[in-house]
Image 1 (tube, one colour):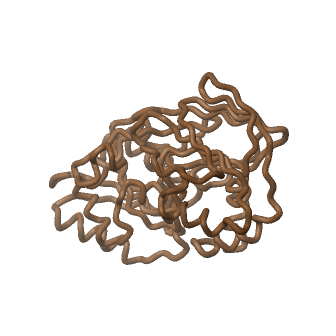
Image 2 (image 1 turned 60 degrees about the vertical axis):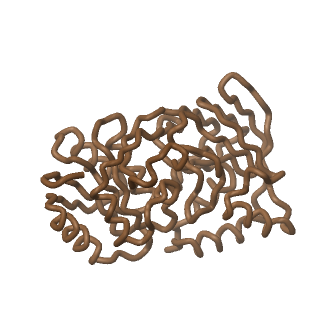
Image 3 (image 1 turned 90 degrees about the vertical axis):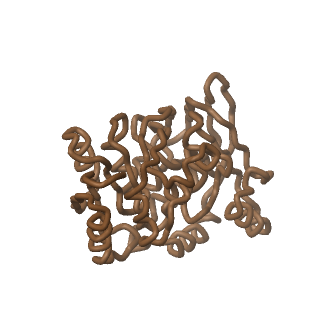
Length: 303
């Protein structure tokens, strides 16, 4: 971006557990140094970022709209901007920051400010789950179950999530379901079904290491329950980007996915829990969201 541009920053003060007031000051100082005009809005409730981003795109007042928060905040801002010409930027400040990590954005807040001045924009895919927008990774099964519990009783952050995973792992069982992947119908048994636009849930836990947000496909990951003695190796493969080599994981690419369960199942969209459903209808929306990236990360093979 160049000078005389106006940028909106939508800040979720509750992302990542602890809000640092210095964040807004750093944003203002950086924009001033680049002779940019900036406006800052704070989310007041769930869904508020959608309204703020949508109004910004409809009024054509801003050159870009930035989500300052975690994956939930990014999802809401994307809902307000999808299908418009207004690009979205991300200043990661959440607990997982899955999409930001996939896009190779700096996790250090000071360094992430460089994105405000970027002129590199990609046309990123998004997808719909029962008509609801997802930009990163959504899922059903064990991760949907954990998402329905995560955040309750003040539990947040990577260690809180890990503790919950360990606690719930033994009592949650694999489930049978029917899946239609484009024109192919199959019967499956899984522990997790991850619908991946990007490569990871967050915190570099890569469930679909070869996924791209610009290839017009979703990576559908069928994960079986891992024997406890093999769980350390499974975790190592996940955090080193080798999960596609695991005997417990099958990954297929599809554009339209339909999942049918014998009973309503807990599921999540970009980490945010949703009301249980007995069917999921999933559709890719190619190149539907304009997203700012750093120039060095704008190559196709990096996203």
